[in-house]
Image 1 (tube, rainbow, N blue to C red):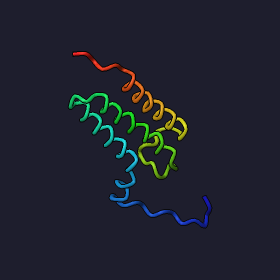
Image 2: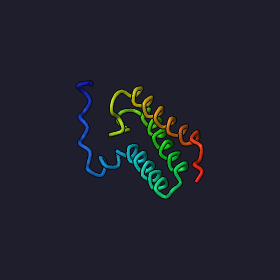
Image 3: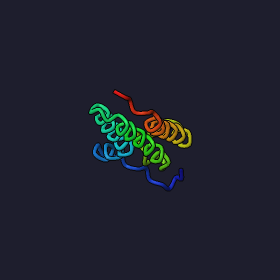
Image 4: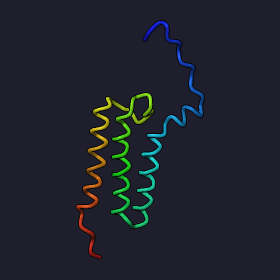
Length: 101
């Protein structure tokens, strides 16, 4: 960091909360997916959960200053893990045959 650069002022509480939109997007999508699973539509709900996690993997590719609490480890590792889990859930949701009741 250059000595000429002025330090950034601290973010206000609303700015801090709004800065967590990537994590909030994933959590809202997973919550909706869980609600759909609870309403006996497991394939659609599981697909929404997987899609939300996959979106999280794509959002993790944003710069670290923009992803907030979605950043856990390095950008590449986080993206690979989230994309793998999301795509895996989607694949399992569509590969499991429907139950015969």
